[in-house]
Length: 120
Length: 216
Image (tube, rainbow over all chains, first blue to last red; front, side):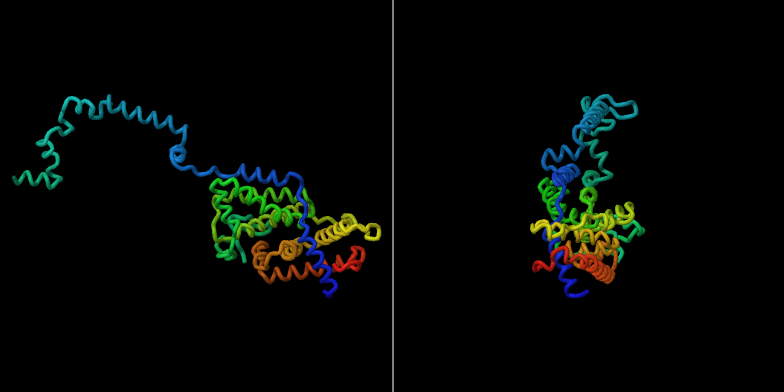
């Protein structure tokens, strides 16, 4: 390439760099709208973050149902399960240890405290 | 250098590329990366700022390659949407955001050019304004821009991309190599051949474009 050709070419490039092509009207606004529409929702802190973490309102129904079912099983357990609520109320000791002696019986195999009592 | 940068689509002719060969932008200053992180965190201002910063560059490149504003807008919109979609999974250290975006844009332009077939022939481009008929500098500038675009349209696709990236977008050869998925030597070769062809095309119009009438 001659110097003249190089100079001419560089003049074209320089002008192209200085005058970028004009964008169609409204293009930037459309692209900004696209960017905002595609943007992930901002992370929330505090109660809002917790609320979103547990799944928001749709999850609340499930949580309430699970809580109610759990409570009801405790109050009126199916036949295969121990009646914990009744034992607590009546002081029954089939499953719940209500006094120190029973406690020793239940825990002597497991704790140093139980061995101490055996030795005494 | 074969690389797949943050899921950037491969060229129409190449197969799946290895993600881990990329060594382009590690440690390179990348201001858009911080904005992209803010974008992912839901910062609306970052979304606007990124769009404002990236759009003119991407649109300008697409326009120079395609020679058509409507198609350049489509490509710009498509490229940016791909960036927004990949943003939550963006892997730092693989590529600069702008390099990735130029690469996506270059590939989208390539796809369009191949669908379109041959570029617009020079004969179909309006002839530059004859400076003898108008003394307005603006008309002469427009004529020169038209002449450059018409000449660019005549170049083979890869030469056109290399010349635009190097001499109009102002990128360095290693970055162009990453964008075009070729070696640096190939970029130098493409650029040199493209410039020679452009000089030949524009040289024939030098007098008509008024280069002998002013210092430029």
